[in-house]
Image 1 (cartoon, rainbow, N blue to C red):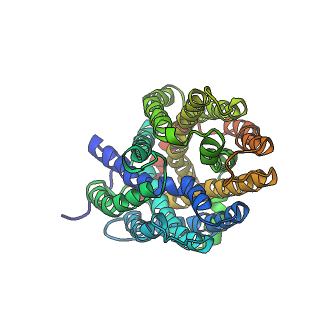
Image 2 (spheres, rainbow, N blue to C red; image 1 turned 90 degrees about the horizontal axis):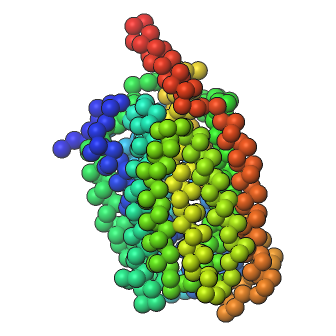
Image 3 (cartoon, rainbow, N blue to C red; image 1 turned 90 degrees about the vertical axis):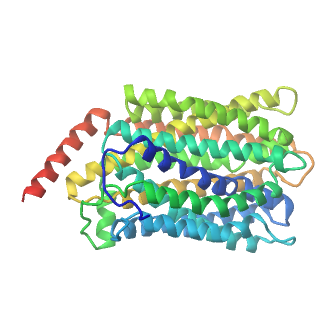
Length: 455
């Protein structure tokens, strides 16, 4: 059987489903490494929290953010029998699988250097995979709602993967908490499932829109073209402040949940509840897009996220901690469904706008530049969060959290990121690619392509 190479703008339910299903093993592999893993290393090994924050910032800037534009540029110009994106998906999956066991099954005396080395390897693999995966998704259809459908199906399987991770401590951990026993199982699952699902998807799903040439070979000139795209400027500004806020809050959620609220044994209950609500919200947000626009969904998700973050200030250890935290966490994930799906679905619309201007199809470069923006913001937000709580005297190894340390946690998870999201709201309101404007751009691109074929 050969890998499917036909380009198509009308893909069926099976292709939609398989493309989204590829996110499932990816999230199982990646999920613990983004927020939980650094906290577990800090709790188990002699690693300073402030040094950890700086080290993770360097790793994410070098092996994550900085690698994005390189992969985007190269993948746009890759020419193989299986298309532009599929070779890079294979490379990214292979690198990730190579490093994941070392990262999730560390030796007895692991150090900060050990963590940095292996998280650098898997982060590079994740970056290569994700850039190619997102660009591929943007090329598979030109339909406004079809792009949203692809993004929501991917979000469904991403949340399903997180749901499985949430259930894993109940089945695999003696304490029913997220620990290295669970990570060991996640590593083995990734080693087996990621290659199988990737192969099935690559064989079945078409390569996408690869007939439009990408001729500009000068990387700097191509980058300047990308950055001069006005809708993309507003889009990246919004994305930066959203992910800056999420980086600040997300870096500390596990410590807030486990060390401060003492809810560690309830990890499975909380996360299952959140994933159930997130999955249930997917058809609702999709219907909102169908009736309004992606911009409206980004705005609505941002408002829900602000409410979720501010709940940190009313949470204290005690009887009400668990139900209130369940509301907070569920609303967090409901907002992410809206924000992340609408943003991924908007990439294709921005690429259309650029194609109309440049006559080139550069989904890889736009995906990479956007992903760089998001990941740089996440890295800055998380590093800032660790530094801020350290200034407040928070100690992750202490038996109890001091009043001052608790205040640091709440400000860094609540008021500070919520204030950043107010800027994000102003930026998304200025995003010009509404449903009507995107339709006008798409029709103009199609006329341009017809003239090009006749010339």
